[in-house]
Image (cartoon, rainbow over all chains, first blue to last red; front, side, top):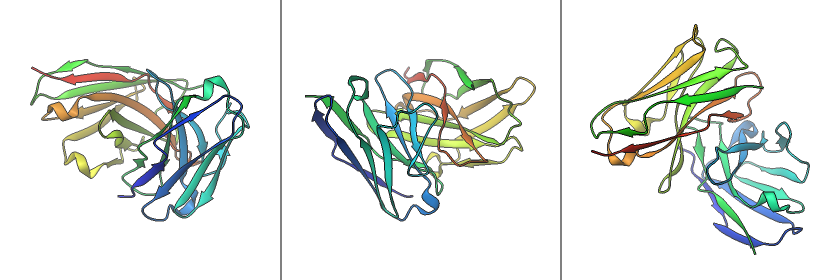
Length: 108
Length: 120
């Protein structure tokens, strides 16, 4: 299985700040089959980014993804109050599909 | 826009079988999409259970050791998860989700989630 390790576990930030979240894979995620999700309490995850860097429908352009191979990042250029949530990376290159353990963004 | 509506019990006894159903609105089960189940626990996080294609092709997470069956009813536009021999470790929020087969996107649509507790 491809293990995805996200860092840091928790980030305390203020609205307006820029943030970069990390996701490292135990093996290369070829074909760029790497996605990012946002999850708020009591809700299902929401797809933000797929194919490493493509924004899903309706996702604001302050969200961007980058990376290749085993190292990937999600950047939020300017945090809005609604962005404070948990973020997960996920690979769909190989089976079983696997998720990272999540990074929680909390308001400072 | 596709909507996934889940149904099923919130409480199941140990050793019994869980059956959850996901009804699809705004899309056809015969479209080029994979229909998946994912579960979430505080301890293990998000775990992919398996997926089914309209042809009946399936893929499963080996960690569930053959306890899972996926099926679909094209006439009702819904698909189902059956998980046998439940234990407390299967207590989780279960989600159904859709993945495109044409443009690989990850899980682009999700059901609302069903909290399933395994307890006597």
